[in-house]
Image (cartoon, rainbow, N blue to C red; front, side, top):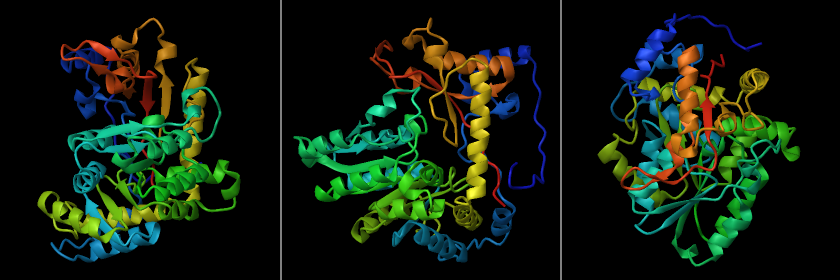
Length: 410
């Protein structure tokens, strides 16, 4: 059972099929355009959509709204430093702000970033700086049906080849996304992360974590990586952060908050450059676009999120949902993670060509039949088209993500 009490109940609107048909036509079949009250079960994302704990609400009430040097900031910075070991901590309103600030301060046009898989905003912020984002997922990621536990890993052979190859001097940054959201939410092993860190150190390339779901990754490591089975998720997370030179964090995921994030850095000179851009675009360095109450809520969320009871309940909920989907005759990307399930829409709808977007067709049908909002992660999201809108490159897989909101931990 869930390790918490539910104290507040919010009613949802129950719509008819006819109403949903009208809504879909009105928004031209763009599920993001739907009004929230037109959605009965919203599985679009877990980002900022979950319930706060009682302790987070209490922390928010006592938040210090001073413009500079608030008590809330100092608590926030202490919690982040204790978790990550990074001396320089810059709060931001969400993860994409951290990406923009870091890449604008670190990258020069023509350089390259490498990742196990760049998330969409990460790739966009790389490209906005005139650089190229290269994904190097491990070979196991290509088998959606296998029970391989760490399909979020980076391909270490290709990473070393890239670092040693002709583009090596242009590689400015390696980003490891934990868990690999663009790779169907699959986790990264600590062994893979440590080996990637060693390669980066050997070539003088900084390694950063996209740590939006660091606790989820740590939980899966404790369950499936033999060398870490006796450790707590918190201990694994601390080790992961210490392998890297810094991190980007959207606290709307494993900060269990509705808004917020941070940029953590070891390099003080780089931190100073980032801080100047932060002041110009986000806010003073001790609030970074956030209210004091938000800083306090994020700090409390970062303390609570590695609680094994909470992470176990998330894993069991995902496992239960996966069973229901399999029983209904649909395939998912195996094995299920914590924050989302990924339906194999390409296999479920083989008669729909990639350029006709089978994933989006399935997402629209889920809404039409049950008022369920999800998101396509296929050729509509990852494919390429020419200037006339004609398809050029299809996505490797046609997926639909179902991301239940997180519950509170205390």
